[in-house]
Length: 271
Image 1 (cartoon, rainbow, N blue to C red):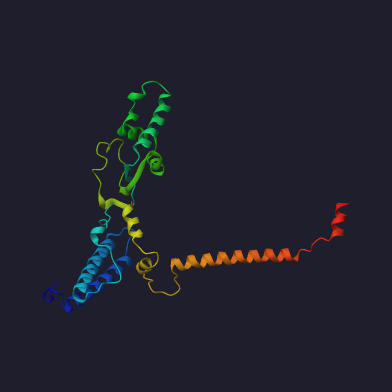
Image 2: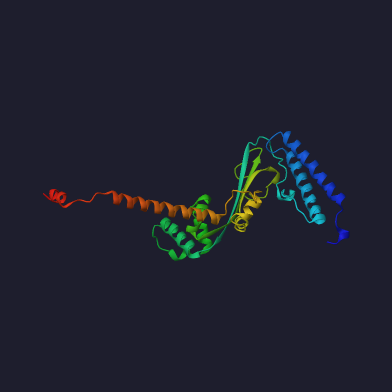
């Protein structure tokens, strides 16, 4: 970035003041909150996130510095909750992705299920378990989704991303009301909570160093008394070796303390 395009010191200072104001508003909203999902708190949170992001960018452009904290951007969060304060019903929406990692294992499991149902009847060549999509239909029809999730490797499947959304409702749905289009009426503003599982999160952790990066993220980098992983392993090995040496020395001392039997005592024992 050229010097002409850089923000002025006054602009950076103004952005810092905006963060301070947003912090005060956020704290005030939290102190006045009327419930766990108070929309005023969500709004104050988003304002604080936007102000912090703007300040961070200006600070970097002007001084090549960054802030020591990170507030998720407003786009990364759900919109303010606008559902009923006391829901009388709820909907749980689940998505789990799988890859068919071992087709032969999948087919074998489906054939076992189908053989048990047919009890060895003829017509095995025409059964649904002979195709991948037929095998999937058999297994997911036979086992509950949670059992598939816990035993996916047995069925030749590999887990992908998954998510669970809990939505609040005013009244329970009528039987069959949404079966034709179960996911069309999803309203993000009625989401009470959501839980996500993704390999992306694991990759982020794998990229961290055993100690340094984790300490930096936790804000404890450079604190004395936090040993390296290698140092801990060496200490454990040294302690184990010391304990073994001590045990061997004790055994030798016990052997030396034993009084040898003389010939007369041996003779008396034999008699």
